[in-house]
Amino acid sequence: MAPPLSRSLGIAGALLGFRAVLLFLGATANHWLPLEYNRIAATVNNPRSVPDEPDFWFQLTSWDVEHYMTLATDGYVAGDPSTAFYPLWPALMQAGAVVLGDPLLSGMILANLLFFGAVALLHHWACSRMDTDAADRFVLLLAMFPGNVFLTLAYSESLWLFLSAALFVAIDRKHWLAVAGLAFLLPLTKAVGLVALVPLGWAALHANDKKAWLAPVASVVGFAATLGLMQLRTGSAWTGFEAQKLYINNASALAVFDIPRFVRAMLAVDGVHSVTGSAIDRLCFLVWLAVLVPLWLRDKTLFLWTAAIGWVGVSGVNFMSFTRFLGVLFPVFLVASQALEPETPESPRTTYAFVVGLMTVLQAIFLFRFLAHWWVG
Image 1 (cartoon, rainbow, N blue to C red):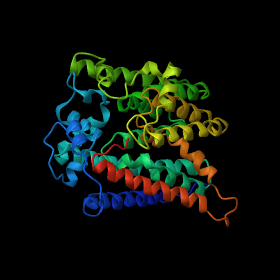
Image 2: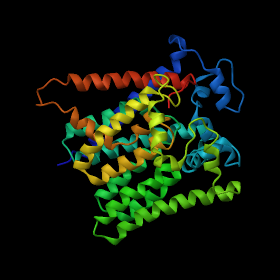
Image 3: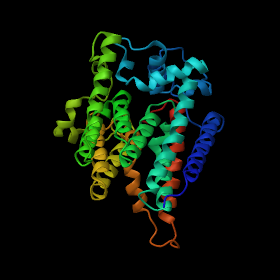
Image 4: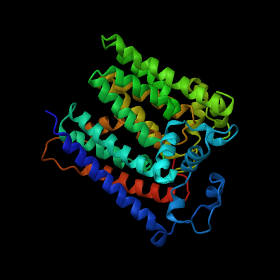
């Protein structure tokens, strides 16, 4: 029997509270941490004036946040690199700014609320599939994963994770109209949202309910809606794809079929955590590979979700930001939770504690780097 929802809400609240403490430490880090501010990167990514001594509010606009703020403020403009980003998240930031007066404030509040909702949903959902201790480990591993530092920043990751969590809750409960609605929103959030039609098609095939086929259709319609919006705002449905060519990772949908390119990218390591040659990104790819067989044995829909979306996420962009991408593939942490299960309730949890501790330290380092405008993912 699953524990009451109040337990899931309590765990989500505790994890959100930890994030608030971490953010506070980040806000004061320039006073006690010898980390140089990356003014060059800030200037490249931020078309607005860049202060010599940035305050905490400006630090929160690091990297992709500035693109989302541009879209929330100015909309889509042909030729602007920001058009490579998908519309649902900046639209929510813009809507929140109508009330709050600032798209960054809106994005921060929305991201934290969505993080809270996603963790609560995933914990409650996991409790129906495993024991409570395993569900606790699952959400703790997910929340502390270094790449998930973005879940409480003004990035679209929290929205994607919330939609993904709600989608699988709806699938388990066979609420196919809700599944279709969520499937429609996924391609409006990220390019890989269209790939969701693979696991959704599998789920529909085994659902014995014709309404289940609405979900894969809805994902295609959602992608078409994204193209239609680009056509309406910029005069070209393909503006976003053209904008992707402006970035260093040379993203391409066709790259998922280009195995030689993938192998070259896999071997092109040039640093611990550089933009395209990150050793950490490639380590995360190996983690992704390791969970595929256990997921296949456990749940075919979860397997197809992780395999299809993960492959597009790593091969289509030459490994760039895969640490961030892996973090929102939540089935990975289901497998990790079981792998770190103690042999008996009385057994020491040394390995689990070490893994969580190491990830927490790395997440803090990632946050401090992000606030100083150094590359994180």
